[in-house]
Image 1 (tube, helix red, strand yellow):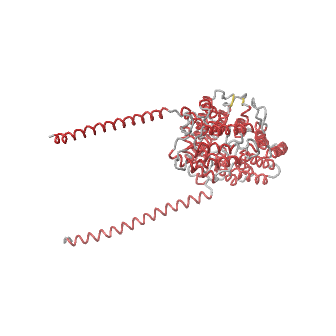
Image 2: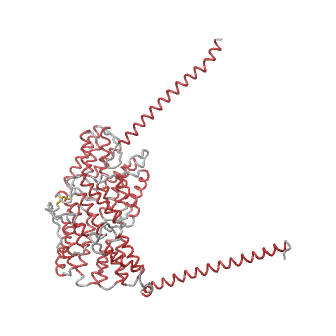
Image 3: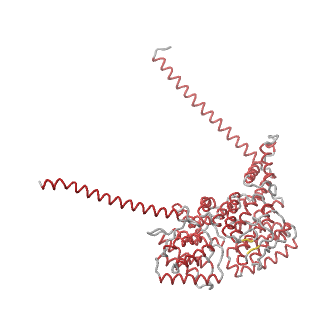
Length: 632
């Protein structure tokens, strides 16, 4: 009985314990789910002011997000904001080694030139402090690798180590981090992949070389990382730089469209898409993004106004100016900058360069040659002109003198210009800003060609052809005036319309939808009775006109284009078009008509043949059927 009782009670006991065990497991599961929910909500609550970056470090937990924000600011070249963000980290966690690395990196603008001696010395000091903090509170091998790479960049302070050598040395360190901490087993360091690609791009972009193996490889890496990290600001930013050439620009359109969304409060992130838009002749989009960038710069930097120009404002304005000039909006652009604007002396190189190009282009693109011939850049605060700026001024003056046919003045000017360039080529400024060498060489070729024009047009054409070909190897994003356009105009002046057409087309290959080149091509084609091609070009001008919001443009290129297209489509005597066709157009028309007619006749013949065969078969079948049924 007791046995029976014991036996009968065991299932009940087992059921009870199972129930308790199940309840316990359920409670634990609920706790885990609740904890995960809290983590998710915390993650969702985390704000990313400069783009989504989660940089892993051994710094104290309360400062980790702030450190990531500093890294994000670095990725968007917001160096001043990155520096102050790393200061906040150091204030809260003085032993955070990576904060010192980040602050050192904020001193170096990888695509803009070598830091000053003072900045190099400061960088050495910060990296050494970071190393000391790392030894006091050891972090990961990865963090040590970042600090080691930084020491390569700032090695020996301002000792005589070339800019490009420092870039290559630093990137060897970044390659180690990329291989071990992105491609390696953990594969988590997206920032390593981004930084590695940036510094892989830098030497080529600095020297003016485009479509290099390094550029193509960096672009491929960034594209592969972007697939799984579509909103990382560094990946999108550097991908735009990797595609910022005439040949690769279409591949950068996706990154351009998404970078501003990834970091909407960052002025540079709002500007960068225009690098791709300018390459593709998307003037409305370029203008829109640069206006947003200028507004964002004023919002985050109260000192920035149209009267007191800051770095990011000037850069966006330069790109905005080029885009709007291709929409004929010269007058509106002149009202954007007051005559008494000022710039800070410490920003004179970057700000002055962009503002000088913006103001020079206003005169040159508008063909205001009197103003161009006396162009001088002297805003308030610009007390010490740098040599590169003087070279740009004199280049614009040479364009003005040439178009005014002041060849005596141009001869003297060209001689002084050659001396200035020779001195600049061996100067410290040339070493500090190697990216300007390509432009200086081009300007020298153009000024020499223009100076030759008064003595020998043939020699001038030969020199301009060489200059145009040289420029086509690395077209600028915002040229003052395409050299190919100057060449096309000189051909036209000599009466060589076919050569002018070829030069215009070559210019448009490098600078799609450049307004004056597009208009010049349409006129030249029409003059040569190449009616169909002329009409196609007039139509493209009308398409460009749809991008402008201005009530009137100056000059009236678009109005002329609209009339030409209307005339071509709705001519009172359509037959007159046939009599104005050139020989090649007639030949195309006759051959095209012959092909269409031949195709029609062949198709009709095949159709009739098939019909006859089918009819014969049907007649045979019908005869057999009538015989089977005894029908006569």
